[in-house]
Image 1 (cartoon, rainbow, N blue to C red):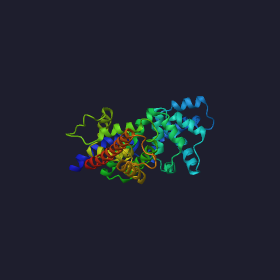
Image 2 (image 1 turned 90 degrees about the horizontal axis):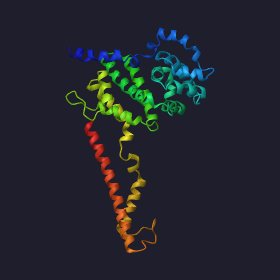
Image 3 (image 1 turned 45 degrees about the vertical axis):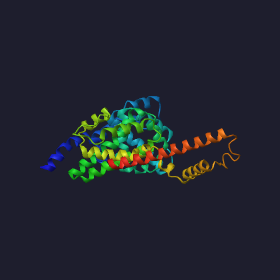
Image 4 (image 1 turned 30 degrees about the vertical axis):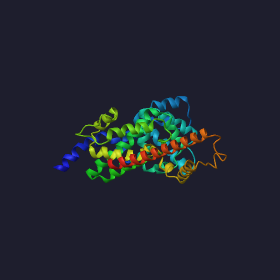
Length: 320
């Protein structure tokens, strides 16, 4: 009975999230086969203005067919160590500039096992440029992809459906690779992922915190994500956002060069000698006082910054 209470609410998620849950072969239905004939005029053998206008008007189902054609081209290019051909890049930019087109593209690219080569770093820069050229709708779709696949994996594990769970893991892992490549370069993406994270922090008395993003809270409620699923999503987002959460990059304040510079600053402050930057010494007593004051302030500021980093890491560790 307890298991049923846990599993039954999850079934709604499975039904609503079918795009992200079913393996690639299950989604290539007879409907898509029928649409293939309707979409032959969109195959990339003679791109022109009219063709790209048609790409932007493609339905979600048509976009999956078109996405397969483009993903095949992209995978072949990656396998050969080449970038995506210019004609295909132009077509891809048109396709992912609309919500149905981008959804069809991601459903194809993120779920088909044949496209593993596409996700071997470094990713094709043309693929990244095509996606980041259209913040709308891709900022939210990129964020939803990793959230939904993470949550639905738990549903399948609870239901004992290992094949479907593996399909969700594939989508999640590929979504993470894509996000890791785009987060440092796509304007607004880190902020969008952070907004989702505010909606999946621990809820008190089954209510989100006041600081949670309202739109993303509605997203979690729409898909009926429980505490376990929200926690799983947050763990993935924490990993993705870790480089952006640090006040000072760990590699910077831990580097030997920084410590050597600080040591030299302390030496100069204590002895009143600066043989490297000011070998002749201050020109007058006033300059000497100013030099010491500036050095002291710089060292104090750096120490405070390091202390804040350490304090932030300790606080984050307690929340885990």
